[in-house]
Image (cartoon, rainbow, N blue to C red; front, top):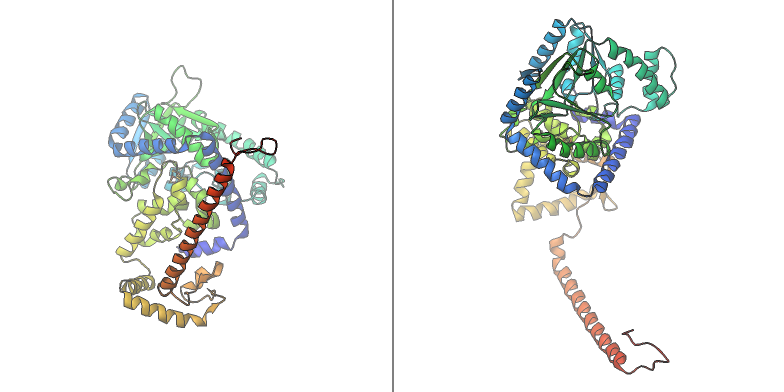
Length: 506
Ligand code: SF4
């Protein structure tokens, strides 16, 4: 598998991708900012959201039990899967029992985590994505590159090419034509599907309901037309009650797309009842652990489970905006992916380099509607990597050397002196632009400042002197101002000829 650096290099050299990702993330980010401003009490609601998530995750065992009990009472089959493989196995068994030929799916990051499409296809079952973005990347044979906008890296010309291939005729790159083609194509699939597969935005513990947020109406079709429904749910999707959903329904769409409300919000409480007009006859809810429970009780990573998968941290991240989602290499990308993937997958050697794909600017934390300190977690991951011996040897040696030099003032001064002499070879106009050694990557896109000819400590005496002089001047200036004020006051206190002018009191 290639490294993050190699994948990022590929992305940086792909102008189409960079423009498409930048255009959409900036639009989403601005939309989110406006929606938060219009809301008026955004910070209070953000804190409320965080408190709900903290409380729920702290009592996850209780709320999961409650949810399962209620969902079963509603007639749903509830399964617990401790690994991805177990979840896939349960879904395949249901599909086999139902003799399913076609499965329609609505967008679900958990199902991406499970690679369920591949598993279904290997079992001879056709899996059809019905979210427009997911459908496009399924045709392209790619993975989603954004939690909310899976095909963010594609422009309409590339999409027209893909859909034309599927249509067997040339389709113009016009959004309405392309969407119209997909709508007609998918309608037939909804009607013929044996199973509908959904994810779960939130699961309500008090009633055993699952809640789906979407904008296209496809999730509603997936969860009402086929006779059997399978819902994949990360175990942390729980919230205690419908009143907590009010807070989440305020935070999620605003943070994801800048919408005040999602277009369709479906609450599903068990399979179809006798009096219901639609809905599946059989409903399976597969609750997935897959490494999540290992974060519980971990003071550094437990808050990861608070994530509501809004994607706002991706749109805010300067690194994601440049390299897109595929460079992260896992199902989840951006700052949340950089933390979640290594946290869920303990293979440090394989994944921890994505924690380096961050400038640690903290924009992700600022954007996050439930205030997850992702930037802190990225630092913990980097530390874990070094502690487990997977750090870059050169970097580790460099850091040790840096610590040895900066922890001793004599050594530090000597090193600076030597640096000032040695840098002469590479400094031009006060900047180091040479692409050598560790500066190679940095100087490809920017320049490093050179060491000052005279260090700050040597300038300190002169600076102090200048500072004192300037304070004295200010004091002199202040005294002159007082004198002028007094003179003016004296003049104003003189009786004024009303015919000639006005006193200050008027
Ligand atoms: S970490 Fe926060 S901002 Fe990022 S996807 Fe999760 S909830 Fe949204």
